[in-house]
Length: 518
Image (cartoon, helix red, strand yellow):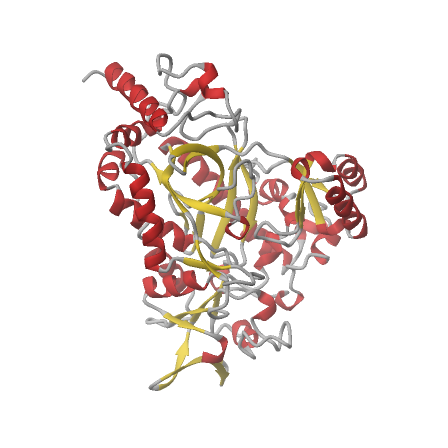
């Protein structure tokens, strides 16, 4: 079969696939699968060919099978504040997000650059603070950050690494470019869903994987354990544990899943004790020494003697053992300063300062409400902007101006004026979309992407990550706590000639691709 014939066939197949499940339109947004005028992108042709071969209604049947499997497998998350049952399954959509090999190469380089610079930044903050002395980041931004821990000043984490596990949120805007939306360096969650989503897709669509040459993600737990063992203080056979707040935490499924996959113990604070300058774990055979703790507890609750004295989740005396170098913690306490959304606004300057390079992955343009000029602009344009609290997550503490009422905007204006340091604002992005199963057809839904980065001997970026999808029609909020779901993310191993639209003769007209409701 000639190249031209294969290209023509892929156009027809995708057109047939999309029309089979209802009229699919782009709604004026960048679509990860379908280009302008409805032309399929080069990277999706194998997926289109295999899905087209399915009998009528088979994709919907498999979507229902996936929904049942999620319940049977117990893949859940907890939602705080729910009055009727806090445990829910994370909705999963069968149509994957596909990233071409050449585009992923740039994303990977950008993430490695960002994490290297942030690690240098955090280390500087807790030592010489040269970046503040040189006027790159204002002192008051750091001093007022809730993530900056004075208890960590002068500390030296094992191997000089502060941020061992990072989840960096990326979005694609209508201009087709990838932007960094935020950094998550404290206890980033969601990687268990990446692994379970991939397992589910491979079982439901083995024929698609055979053709698509998707890069694997299954080795993540082994790589994570390698990173953790690398931090161990001189023990040839280190004992690694995962510290969880307990069964009522929103990510408890992930904690237990990762512990099982890595072959390490899942412990709570009450299972650990500090004695003779070391951390010990209670076992049926007595106390056994712990060398590395992968902590899924925020700094505040880690050690009641160092942080919050009312914490019942942590281990009294843990920070003293850590400072003495007798136990390793991942991520290092104090690394959350780089999660602050005001600090985020300075990351391009941070990269330039430490590495002498321009940021490969740009930030979303950001207004800092603590700066007088930016504050005036934000207050005058609240109905057009997205406003975020500096230290909130999960879609909370946020205003999406174009989707808000006058009353909500007025309320946020009062909050900003009362505490400008706590807020940033950004333009409302036209997040890219991916075809998503809705009832018995496909509709575009907005997505973001959270790749996971491990920092041990070197920096490793999982090929893909968690694609979160806003399942509510028109919604831009992808968080699971706000009604979002997830998709499998395929990074292709083979480079396509390019990832631009396949030209001409696809069967879609301008009216078909752009018309209808978004």
